[in-house]
Length: 137
Image 1 (cartoon, rainbow, N blue to C red):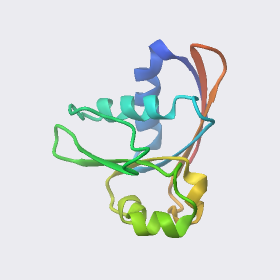
Image 2 (image 1 turned 135 degrees about the vertical axis):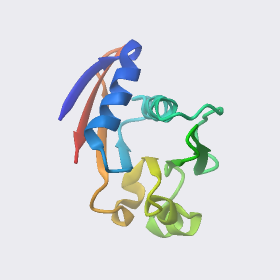
Image 3 (image 1 turned 120 degrees about the vertical axis):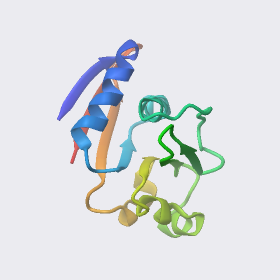
């Protein structure tokens, strides 16, 4: 399933991901540096009711948020990790099997730990203001 969108339509893209992927809650975001993974995940979290400040987990590895319904959401960035073992030690596996929403950037660093039900999201920049998103359920 593919969606082309502009940055001004990012809320529409976030809603589409949530709707089309239900009831799955583990998402692996693939894409080059600068493709907009963090921006899209931030928007998804906002659309799911997170009102607190949302930032990139590049250095913390795991950011935990609570939405307006009291649900936990995880935003994870594996970019700085070497392998699956480092991801496990960092607590990534616990998050992705928690049953809570979990959004992971750079999943290829530890692809073997993801559940079969993971929604793979491939994001590509197709211009300064446009993106192509492909979901594999």
